[in-house]
Image (cartoon, rainbow, N blue to C red):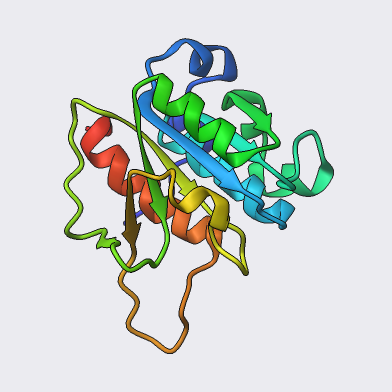
Length: 178
């Protein structure tokens, strides 16, 4: 017989412990995301994979907000975050801190995520763009490399928080999840 684990059996860490445990060297940048649900879901996934930080850029909604909290379920309290109005300022600061900046976008020189080699000795920042327009045009030339997720159906894109979950998992497998 199989039973679901009870919450107390999951042995999750509390917010105070989360704040002090070592994070994976990954920052998630949300570029002009419109949906508060996408923001909240990204926080929740970032918590699950011990992501170092989220940077909210442009019009991306910021906590605290009830709609963000619905999807985040408290992850806005555990995951460090900041806001930067200009995406290129955020990118330049990340590069100054030694991060390789990777855009998650379909471009003329993007690499399929299945072929992208994640180097466990590097720090990465991944940029997720607006639900309709993708990554801001003004940021494209400032990004080191691009990844896209293979899609086999009729739709040309994934929901941004679903895309973020796939990307965070791929990086977490190499950078820290054992």
